[in-house]
Length: 452
Ligand SMILES: Cc1cc2nc3c(=O)[nH]c(=O)nc-3n(C[C@H](O)[C@H](O)[C@H](O)COP(=O)(O)O)c2cc1C
Image (cartoon, rainbow, N blue to C red; front, side):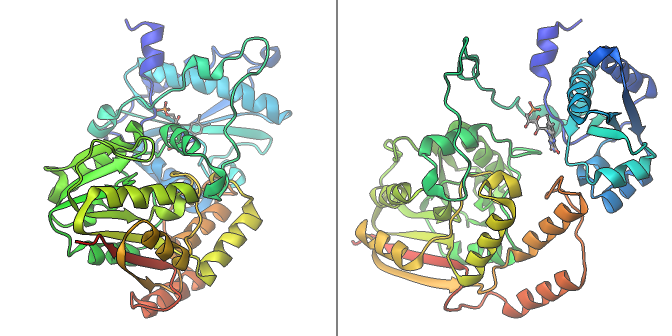
């Protein structure tokens, strides 16, 4: 029998499952564990609706905008509690859920607590829950597949960091503003270290249109020899590199694991890749003979001073005659309007929209300032080309907004694509725009050379 400590320490969120059915007897054990949780005045006013039927799950996805994750789990349980007091309902529900997660882990099941379950009212209607119930969350159940088995336990904060004796004495992360200048490098590293990037290592988290990805592939196609990719992060672009000897540089080991995992999925370059960590604005021990350095959709996420550090670092590590390629979103009119609307509607916290929250802050760069920055760091022949007057990622942003509305504000991601007159018009406009160069585009490709 496994010890309590072992079960607690080995529990992890599982988001991909084998197709094997979960027997009712096991589900009953999981629900039984929930009933041992404490409740206010011992009222025990929870309800547990078990759903296995794929038609019901599909209905939840389509009508209530539940996360598409639920279609991957053989079984799920909707945990609700009498809503006479919402606070009490959520407290009691959460305690029951934790018992369920631990019991399921003990039984060898993979399990996920999930609050991106969609619109409360519609969920209740579909599964017949009375209106006075407060839904606490969904719990997905199944047998973890190989990828889920292999996934590491995500990093935990140390007790020292979170425990206070008699009086609070810690450091609270500042508001996670869209403005990267309001983040210190330490904030970004801490945020990246713990903020879960979901599903599996190597999953790309960026919001990016295929046209933007194709642009990256086109711009990288001429690269040869040794290349340093700065801030590879989720590794989303690694598969666009041609067969070069690639080194990725990240801000911390946890982030480097995402780059590594993405590289493993990237057949062309994985075999001869290296992964290094940036410390004090440099990768001091890295080679100084790279043929090129790349910064792909990252400059817009960095505090101003750190932008300079990265451009300087690239200069120090690229050999004479070598080049730098920066691809970044820039401050064109529609891009700025978009961010203004987002910040007005949702406030200045990247987590509120989930759009750029995984890396840190986000502020499209100014082309002229960036060209000046490159030149001041020693780069010559600095030139820029712009694309996409209408930001191509508007397509995904609109899908996220539709998911947000459909799910009663509970989620943006894991959606089924929706089509309406607006989405069709936007797709048409984007197709007409294509990836031709334009003067005031939302994406800029900047190249510079290090003098021979
Ligand atoms: C209240 C709550 C809601 C969550 N909702 C989701 C969700 O909607 N989708 C998801 O993939 N994970 C969800 N999670 C799982 C967390 O992402 C996960 O617990 C966290 O990253 C820590 O990882 P671990 O569970 O493996 O320790 C949720 C967790 C909690 C506690």
